[in-house]
Image (tube, rainbow, N blue to C red; front, side, top):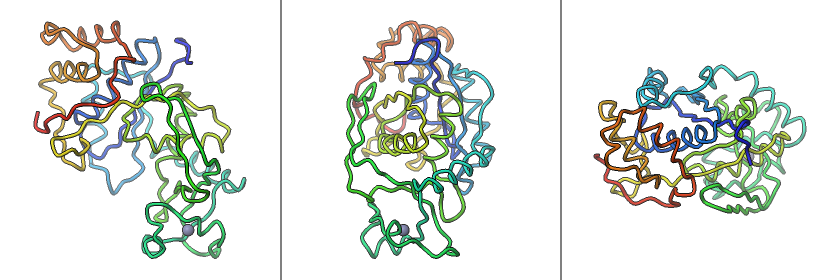
Length: 298
Ligand SMILES: [Zn+2]
């Protein structure tokens, strides 16, 4: 368990658009858990995929967090400024035989019915030296388990090779997992509270932490919010941006969904009063494992 003094948490949005209510839930849960245990709370902007990013989104996200009263510690870290570190770790994994070059294109994978579950092809048939390749990390453990702080014990089982995952893309961009593991370690993150849409990624990150001999943070995955079509609230599904004119209302609603039972009178409080109340009364074990469907428009 993290001790109060050593707790470091973080919120790590991608600047693909403005924050929506689903991102507020994740940010708020992570913020409150850290603050309730007198921990640090950091912000990291995961800007590794320029084609998917929206100009100005990073600044907008930071302004929105600030407006909601979710104040962070220290400097904001931008992944786009840390490519040297990722390149160094990538090389280390290759040198240690824990990652390998893969030249399979999407159509190759489709032909071999390996699009959603890789078949380990390039483990056995290494590509030519000059071929343009992605890099895959080995998934050597066939059973990965961890105790989730909210969802309880999680177990991931897979066949050898079928879950080797991409950490560097053929188009020359670093993939999500390597950067996240590198930064969580470099920033001393001890506990990650985030949405359960990232549960599968957690297993991959545990593998990478093992490969790199990094300690594993504690993880807690809050339930994800669905729109009325049963889809995850996300930028892709056009979830509405947070309304900064109604910060208190949205914070109150987020607290309610997180099982924190804010009293109705707190709807008339200021952001600060509401957040201070929430830090003092934070009960992580009241967070439900699943969430009721919320209408998309509100
Ligand atoms: Zn391959």
